Length: 250
Image (cartoon, rainbow, N blue to C red; front, side):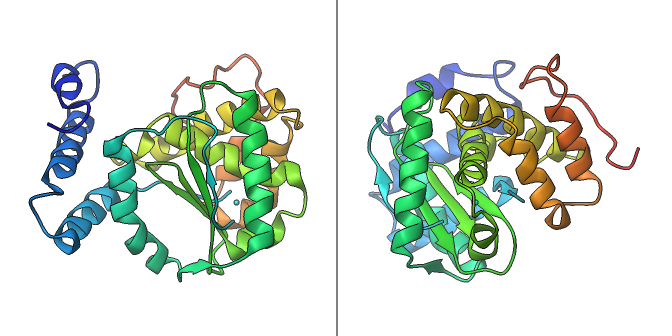
C-alpha cells in the first residue's frame, strides 16, 4: 500500500470535492504502481494527470534542496518528480544559475523558518523562458522563469513570488479540479496572495511586496486580474481563504 492510502480512502466526499478525491486516489495508486510499471510509462501518466491541475502564476529561480522541514509525502513527491520533465521542457528547460539558486534558497529558508506550517523540502529552479511566470509542482518544486527573475531585483519581490507558490503547494491546489471559469482560477490566486502577504510579514519582509509584485507583472496577467488582486490585498477585513467571485472587468 502507498503511504496514506487508508487515509485517502477515508477522506471521501464531502470532506474533499469528488474530483479532487478521485485525483488523490489515482495519484496514490500511481505511487504504488511505480514498482510494477516502466519508469517511462509512469512518467507520462503522472505528467498527464498533473497537466490537468498545474498551477501557473504570473508572479519568481534554479535548484537547491531546502531540507529544513520534513518531506511532503511520498505521493506528492513522486507526482511532482514525474511531472517535472514535461513542465521543464514546456518552459525551455532549467537554467544553471548558482547565484540565483543561492539567493532563492536563502530567501525561501527565511520564509519557512518564520512560518511553522510551511513544510518542505523546497527546491528552487529557474526556467529558460521569456514568459513572465512562476509555477510549482507537488513535492516542493518552485520554478521562476528567467524573464520573471530578471524583474525581481528586490529580495522582497522575490520573496513574494516564492511565498505565493508556497501557498499553492500548502493548499494542494495542484490536486484540485481545474476551475470551471476564470473567476475560479482568479479566486485561487487571490487566496494565495493573501497567505503569501501574511507569511512575508512573519518573515520580516514588507507584506506590501505582494501588491508591488502584482503591479510589476500586471502586463503578464489576464486583463484586469492585477487590479482585482491589488484591491483584494488592500482589504484587511477579507480573510485569505474567503473564496468569492470577482469580475476583473467590472
